Length: 241
Image 1 (cartoon, helix red, strand yellow):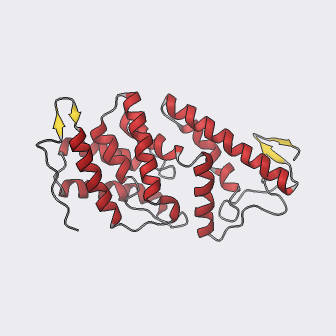
Image 2 (image 1 turned 30 degrees about the vertical axis):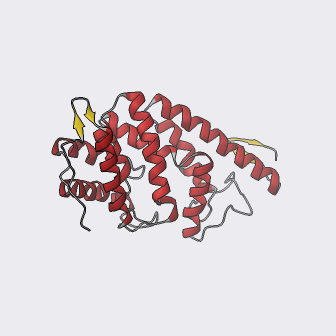
């Protein structure tokens, strides 16, 4: 892929990345991503656009460095592996390196590259890497917020379809009396991961949005329980459908 070099002349001012620089960067990132394979429909370009939009909002609120946040948000999934891949926990490190290689190739300013690498590597839940900068905290929050709410439900179903998973266990839909298995049942993933994400948020705005979206998802499960005639379990308590 022949990507034009990043032009520094109008990209940066004394206050940081300019509007012209942002437009140029995003165009180049989009072109790069268009040439990369994706592991599943849940990690498509629409996911990237949502994460970038959220990251920009959080960056403004947290007064973070957009020259790190924006490219990291765009490129955080430039390498993706299926959820059941044996190297899945290494995907964010592979993406971080691929992103830095790409940015180096287009001549993006070197002083930002370490921060971008860390923000991408640390965004992953499975990698379990502690964030060391506000920029990494923002990218992590933005990505995890997209796993929650109405979008989160839809994306969870998309990924589970790739495993040929059932929507829920017929005998125990909410895993009240059995060990949960999110490779076998889509709804189990709500409990094994998604409902835990709100507690991992780094920013105040991220925590607030994650709480709203988690509440929506619990409402979805209550409605599901009502429709299938089963009790719904919330935080260890069972409510009758």
